[in-house]
Length: 233
Image (tube, rainbow, N blue to C red; front, side):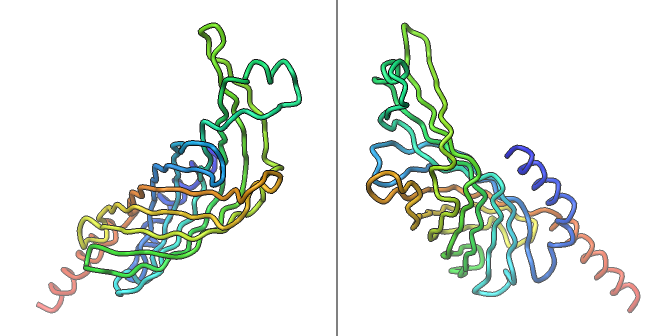
């Protein structure tokens, strides 16, 4: 996952100036998140997503926003411990808790509508490909923290589909301007079919968008315009 996120940043730096044109905006999205799993006695856990974004025709009232989330995070914490099929471990962690960490590759495809020149609403679909999942058993024994990790990757569905929606605000009309938004994801896929109930992923995200190469293109266009005016003179 670390290598995938690193590769994503390198791609953004290499191709940002080529993808930030008059018809597209391109950059990086950093997204702190709070995630949980439905029909599970648990609490929300924090996570961090890292993705690339591409906007098609952001100059229009309706435009398409696509993200490729190389580092996606789902899961929950404070889950009641279950049997590990080892009596000694079950005894040690009986009064502890479990944190479920799910790493994914995500692809949100959203339509944005400009409420104003800087403020937009968004809604669409999102598919998540499960990469790795772990249950981390935690407890305290005689004042010392104790952890035991169980890999549950094969017990979860490979693909997770859901819907997403939120609000987005860009700090200025400049292409090089950053933006911030809030988004909610509601899973529709029962991701853990061996358990009773519909185990779907949910998430609240704070999305911070950072355009890559937009300022360079803006300066180039400005210089080109100045040269054209000078040639006319």
